[in-house]
Length: 203
Ligand SMILES: C[S@@+](CC[C@H](N)C(=O)[O-])C[C@H]1O[C@@H](n2cnc3c(N)ncnc32)[C@H](O)[C@@H]1O
Image (cartoon, protein in one colour):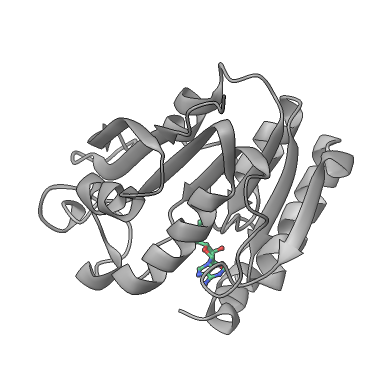
C-alpha cells in the first residue's frame, strides 16, 4: 500500500489503531531511561505519544500525512506536542541520521522482504551505542493459528526474518519470538513477531 492508500484509510476513521501502546513495545521500553527515540512508520503516533509522555524526545516518521496530522492533534491533546517532531518521509527510501537515537521502534510495518530489509537497515543504523531497537509485526503464523493483520503472506514475517535482517549490523539480539497477544472477545490470540536488540556501548 502506498501513502495515498494509507491517507485514505486514516481519513476514513477517527482512530484506525488503538491509542494505547502495543504491549510488547511497552514491555521492552518501560524501564529504559528517556532519551531520543525514533518511531518508524508511526501512523497516528500512539508509541511516539506514549514515549513522549514518559519523557522521551521523539521523531515520528511516516509517509502518510493524514496519519501524522492525527498524531499531531492527539499529541497536542495529551500535552506532549513539544516533545515530538512529525516527519513525512518514506522509510524505505530515506534513512534517518545514523547513530542518533537511544531507542528505535518499528511497529507493524508490514512490507515485502526487500522493502522491509531496507527500512530495517536504516532503522538499525540509527541506533546509537547503548541504544535499543524494538521491532513488532504481524507474524506469518497468524494466517493459520492467529487473528488479525494483513492476510497477504508476502508482507508477513516471523522473528527469524527480522533477526536475519539484523545480521552484520552489530546489534545483539535479546529477544526474538512469536508472542501471543490475547484479543478481547476472540478465541485465537494475535501472533506477533517480536524482536528486541541492543547495540553494545562503545569503548
Ligand atoms: C499498521 S500501521 C502501524 C502504525 C504504528 N506503528 C502503530 O503501531 O500504531 C503501518 C504504518 O506504516 C506506514 N508505512 C507503510 N509503508 C511506509 C513507508 N514506505 N514509509 C513510511 N511509512 C510507511 C503507514 O502509513 C502506516 O501508518
